[in-house]
Amino acid sequence: MFNNSNSTNPHNVDNNSPYRMKKDTVKIITIVIVAILSLLIVIGGCLGCYFAGRNAERLSNFKDDLAIANEVYSLIKEYYYQDISKEDFNKWAAIGLSSTMDKYSGLSYTSVIPALQFGISIKSDSYNNHIISAISHSSDSTKPTPAESAKGLISGQNSPVSLERGDILVSVGGKSVEGLTTDALNGEEFFGKATLTDAIDLVVRKSNGKEAHFTLRKSLFLTKEASYKDMGNGIGYIKLNSFTGSADEDFVECANLFKSNGNSRLILDLRDNGGGSTNILSVIASYLIHNSEGNSNGLGVIKLKSSKTQKVTTYTATGNHWLGLDSAGKKIPNYKLAVLINENSASASEALLGAIKYYCPEATIIGSPTYGKGIAQQTFDLTTTKEYVLSMTVGYFYVPVGANDWETFHGRSMMPSSDKYTIGKFADLIDFTAEDENNIKLYTKYYNNDLTKEAAVEMAMSVLA
Image (cartoon, rainbow, N blue to C red):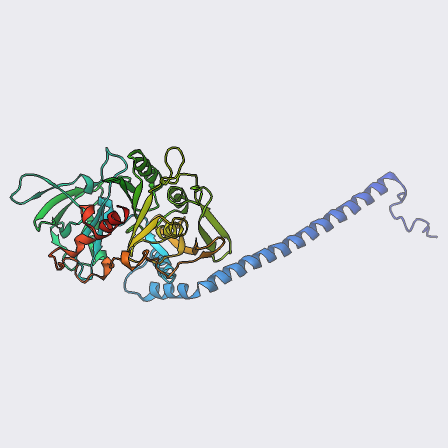
């Protein structure tokens, strides 16, 4: 007879023995570990699919955003008769895109206008006559600008002559500039062709009608952005070229000269000043604006409102430095201010002018209506190229017009004090080489190496007398 008493335990092992309990424990642990690993694999797979999907979605959106550009490049690459690299395509696509913004925004070369690299500023009329409107001066006397140090010769004369404000440009590098646009003049065939070690030849027509020949060698220099001239009779003259670079330090130096010479009347020349830094503006404003007690520190000069974030930033005068105070801190009884402006006075120049109009009853504004640029740009360095920088308009400027009132001046020129102090725009001259009824060249009334012969300066001297 078959014995089946141990049929449930074929190996005849005690179910309660330590060996059996240990084996069951291992099984349980193994099952748990496998379950956890399986769960982790599932979760990992899900997360991977999720992020892969997100990345694919982003990539798809990116491709969709640039669908036209990518398609155009594909067609160019396949059919255009010349090879265009993706790098060149990206660059020109960026230039084209940025050019659709306002006229103050866009990609631009990081280098300055070629003519400025020689220390020359040039103005042109509608006939493309070109006048040297300014000679840049270096902030380091041991390293003058090429134009500042240039010495030329007039045929038949032995004495060298200097390059001067008001000289008419005749030729550059042996090529006539007659009828050339300003862009062409600054192009590679003229001013733009010189390298750091190259020299360039100029021929200019002096005020006496004679032609002088100059050789300028391009060099590295830091431009002096403000200069001072004592005009006599207690009058000082400060020319402020811009609100960039060392403009605040240069202006302070000029202000100290004004004070040390015991002057009480100031001509501030903002003509052709296209603006610059609001921080520099704050420093310079502290020497020009004031409240009824003669204090300037903390007075609001300009507000900047970001169109995207709606954030409003107020820039105020920094310090109590008003030039209308004597060394003892008392008001100078006969202090006066004349401010010269023209159609090229823009941005920070107009902001300073707005503050002067509001805070300074002793000021007379002389010249032609300003540019009317009440918007601010910010410049961005690009990480993908060093060849260009991107400038973009970021918001509007506002100037004080009341105790708590501010107005934007964008699109509206700031005007002289009255018609009595208005001078026609240089840009409106049909031919600045023409003469007036007194046989005086028209351009000499705007840009003259002898400041006292300029119409705006003559008027300022009369106002301050």
